Length: 437
Image: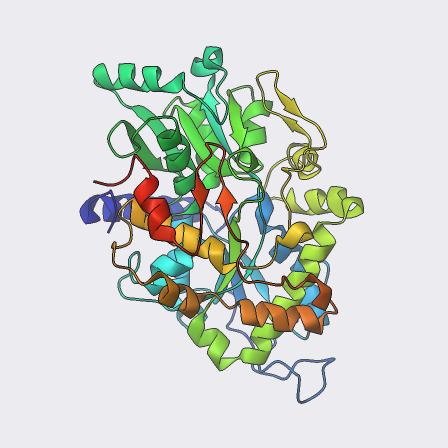
């Protein structure tokens, strides 16, 4: 199913889930045990348009890009659209998110989540679940806003997106019997793919030259502090938190690899959306309005203050706010001021779930052996991507002008000059020098 053997993957996932259970047992925050959504008609909506239910259980991970779900809850957008009983539940890891989506709210899990974009595809294909769990992607939650960070041990290398100096260090570690340790958040997820792309573009085989390990986002900095890793890829605010604690520096913010790249998505179980289509539309409308709110400059400080709460990201607002404005202190003297590579929630089509982007994620998962080479990409994308629902919701909130002319953003160019044409993903795959054997 991936470069990890099935056995190794299960061990890794099980360990992550066990950690989540341990944290829960010690008073950590995980999915709440709130009751299932009520079936009473939504208040404030006309009978024909009223959602079939007034609640849903949504999950999120402690990352800045969970903001649209948090803001939809805190600023009353869910309630505005008749979804007054929505709960937004903190998950300890992406493995926990997957497990709770597999359960569904009727069995104590969740109905949807802030999620790594490839995960709904891997779940639908049954590659990371006991059996296929059909999912829909209703919106992209953000573009940009992730980072690759390295420990202070490599300060002299001054690594950036182009990091040719890294290979000699990686080779030396490997020759000495201890591989370079790279952490990401979930096999086949966005952080895994950004780390793999960066390594491979700099001549390093992520399958054979380094060890890729799974660490939940909020635990990245602590693991760097204990010197159990050399580098990690994660979303904000954990790259900035590393810099604040002077434990390392950011080689790059991921927009430097691919400007305005897609990141997290809003995904819901297919059976829930199909059963409650009006409620799903109401949820989506609320999230889109929250994305518009999050991307207004005058709201950034308040957004970051809300996110800083223990029940959400649990990080100082000062470690969230500057990067949300496009100001990056990368920790090694390199800075970006008013950068266009800031995390975007709505502007520049950030919210629209382009099918071309989903096609790239699937192609990369084929590249690294997490999906079979004969995967029917068009079929799988058509099953999961619900750009049609996004367009309906955008029209309903008066944002028809924001609907892109095409579901494809066209040819994309990466920092190393490689191009991806979504019309011919196999040509892209064949052009890559380093990939799964």
